[in-house]
Amino acid sequence: MDIILLGPPGAGKGTQAHRLVEHHGMRQLSTGDMLRAAVKARTPVGIKAQAIMEKGELVSDDIVSELIDAELTAMGSATGAIFDGYPRTAAQAEMLDDILAKHGRKLDHVIELKVDEDALVERITGRFTCAECGEGYHDTFKLPAKEGVCDVCGATEFKRRPDDNEETVRHRMDVYRSETAPILPGYEKRGIVHRVDGMASIEDVTAALDDILV
Image 1 (cartoon, one colour):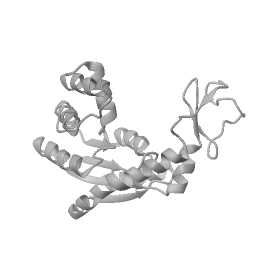
Image 2: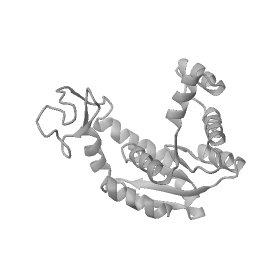
Image 3: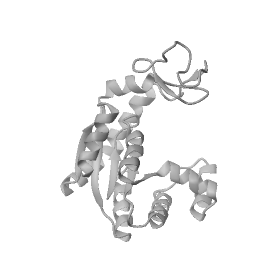
């Protein structure tokens, strides 16, 4: 089956997509990852995209569609797709329908991970990682057992993403509400939208997704 995972940055889409891959043998299709892979592999669409990005311009919806079309062709019909972070706009939603139809596929579920904005700000702004091994920590929810020392590798250097700040997080929420959330009513008319509490524990969110996909 083919599904879309929706939710603002930090809602846990990536984490849950990885778990769906493990539990259901699906393929996660992240447009950012596909774009980087195409550029690295010097595929025709990757070369085209690289030329655009080197000019500092955004990659067009048409190029993203080419990436998805090529990926679905390579996957074959037996593997389900998880669209992570795509579509983001009504135009992209229409394009995705056309691409899936071309491959004899259709969307089975659109799942939105619902979040509390203030809690999401706390979740994201508190994140930090070990500079050596990448182990993740949080100011409130997961501090190292020994202050200043990584539990995994024993390193003493940590880092934070520069965009993990309140202003950026709230801007991302505004963008999600204005650009992406409006695509949901169209999917609701088809009866394929589900909403899951993205603020629940990782295990509880996974269980809710598994129930939807049964």
